[in-house]
Image 1: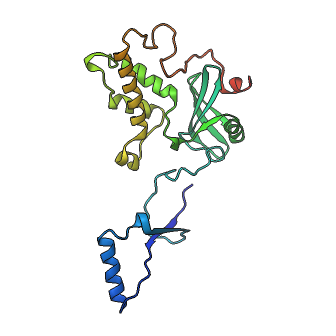
Image 2: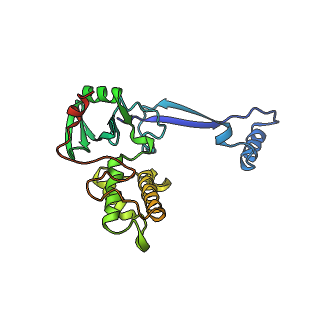
Image 3: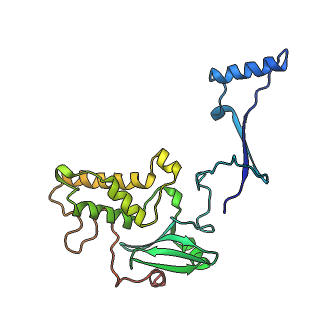
Length: 239
């Protein structure tokens, strides 16, 4: 739930001057010459704002990276339960007051759980907030396989395909906001780098299997998919 805040960043300089105008003018000169700037000398004050108006700007969600993902889950958070070489991953898709709806990588299904249960899981295992800049490995795996199926991991066509990456991200609910588009879409960059590393590895060691031959796990990103594998609840009960 978003709230309105009044945010004021000020640069305060104490000075001797003959008049208010002289003080104001000299302050402006210091700013123009770069001797004063908001990065080094600014102080920001944030207060709740109860006034109306149309001049409010919307801050990017989680830009401060201070949200507690255990107590305040949001879409894009994902849970990771490790058992040996197998990892169970659950990606939050949507939330209601009582439920957390998540995509389960092992069974490739969407499920729901009470918030209290989700909080219990997140407290006991590894929770990745959506702002930590890590794409779930099963999504990376899918992007790698999609590139391999199109012959884009080796040869002259070996290159990450931005449109293909964005298509897969969109499938799992990753939609960049204006801030991410302007500053570089982190999820696309993350997968792009993973695929680039895979391409480089294939070029350096062409004799190695790619990870999609037979029933192997996917190379460096070892998360398998099988409907016969347990659900998150069953998986968690084994601990």
